Length: 215
Ligand code: SAH
Image 1: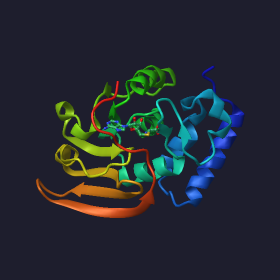
Image 2: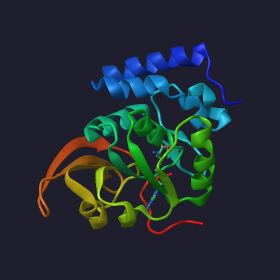
Image 3: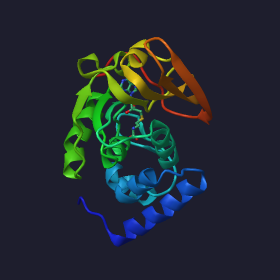
Image 4: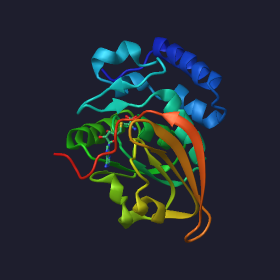
């Protein structure tokens, strides 16, 4: 049942217009939203809602992020082809697919085993191949493959994990929503070994980034 139709494509073009009207300008990011069949990333009961600009429940009490939020975070990352990108919170794999569509090499970590297993099987089926996926704790980053050009966190972080800052290349960008109930979208640009530039971009709401790996 892995199929895409002209109807879905049409709905996607509407979604692109919506996201654009909310301020997303990057043509490649808009192109990714137009290319990726988001309905296939959602549990079947929600397929009719796949092209609304909303977050929706997926397995393990998690959510697939709102398309605008995905676009906003991706635009802040300024992805170049071949960028080595670390993603924390694979979830449905939708954000992963956006990064792959932009020709990034994606390393992604998911804390929920069930989601990790499901998305690991699913992504290649729809033609999106990540460099590496793992079940683990994103607070630690992934030192084995560091440093990264870009790092994106797709869950609400109560604080900025130090390993993520230290695993960033000089000139690299970390995009992370920081806060408990409400999060401030925050961009860190690494200027030097110990110097980071910090920019804040308003309020968002994410499911919380949790400690340690779940079963
Ligand atoms: N990018 C995903 C967003 C899923 S919601 C999508 O669009 O589908 C956030 C995800 O982060 C959830 O899947 C959650 O299980 C995961 N997560 C929460 N805490 C984490 C941690 N410490 N390490 C890795 N993943 C985590």
